[in-house]
Image (cartoon, rainbow, N blue to C red; front, side, top):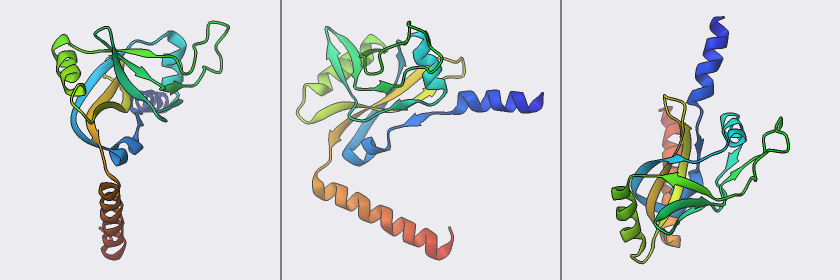
Length: 158
């Protein structure tokens, strides 16, 4: 009985991260938004079947959408299964939408999805970040800092 409840808790704690976004962009602000999903999409997300490859957010008629977010088809779904690469609407407050829209109009800013997780109430949420693209030399500095941290941890066992 206790083992089943532990599995249930782990089921909701799992999140899917976009590690590449932190390498490609300097994230200045983060926002948490709701996702508009169908039933089979939720089931696929709960099993951890999503990919952020080349995904981004854009505005269309004052609403924010995420594009190229791949949520795999649900294995046990019927003919009502969802499309894996469809555009999904993000739910934010109007004030946050206006703030993001104004920033996007500036040169170099983009909105990238960072993480998909489940809230305590069981709703799927997505963390999006407002960021500027890194230059090649910034990426080299990031790689160099990561390697030195790894060497220090290896040498001193921290």
